[in-house]
Length: 230
Image 1 (cartoon, rainbow, N blue to C red):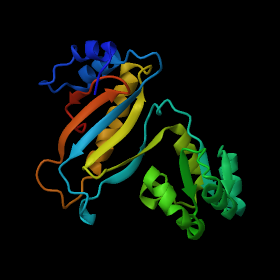
Image 2: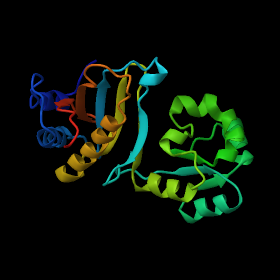
Image 3: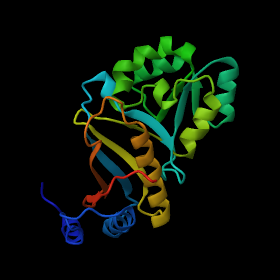
Image 4: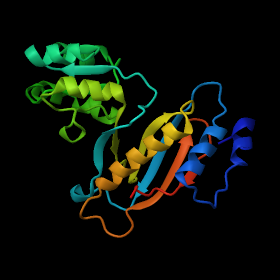
């Protein structure tokens, strides 16, 4: 892949052989985020587990103390009192079978988070093949299948992020924007890495966090310690 001059200049600031502390890594990533837009800062963590085995899955959700810097549009499948609670909490879209049909027939995806009450899953299940690949399918483990939809909407809008393994046993997750202060990014990072450590499966053997990197949308990756706080 051919890289631009801005990226090549940023790479010079990163020592590929060094593992940086959270403070050093955050400062370096911010320094290297020189694009004309507000770049997203992401954490990438390779774990010493095998996602092909059910007892080694790592998945969860956590509310970042300073949010992600992104406005999250929420879609809630609920009826009656739960639907009213979702609307009161600020959900952009609330409905039932009508929204299932809209997604399937119109290829409509103007939302970032999907939440559902348990009784709605009989309808939402029809969306598995389209929501699943996008990482949008509601799941009890991430708190998006719940009777307390009002709380779920509030958490989503406050900066709740879901982390899960991909097929290569890596977690990719945003921790904020390059415009955040170093302190805000450090705190968001530590909150997320602590949550990942708490999710360590009992079946996991050996080193749990094999490597961890921070990067901005257009910047180089910076290796970080990846340790939980004491």
